[in-house]
Length: 80
Image (cartoon, rainbow, N blue to C red; front, side, top):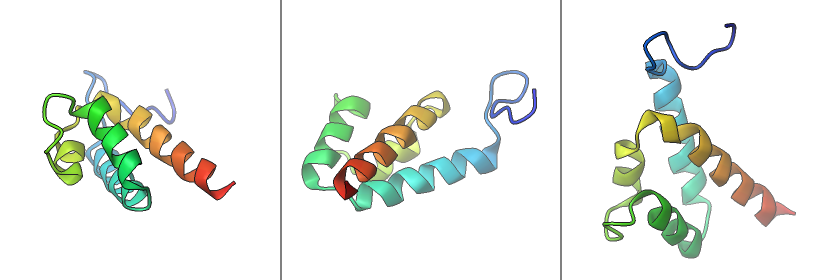
């Protein structure tokens, strides 16, 4: 398939993975503490003291697309 993010075997292109992680971190830095806490609850509910950067770095690849979408939507809502 053209434009497929996942290679055969299920792993994502490394450059896309790194780009997604960077964009999530950049987006989260634009959001409030309450947004950051909500993100932590979704992606690191067992360790809310963990740094956002670490949470994003430790996220499984299959969650990156949805996490990026959530961050982008939150930023968009703040700008409306």
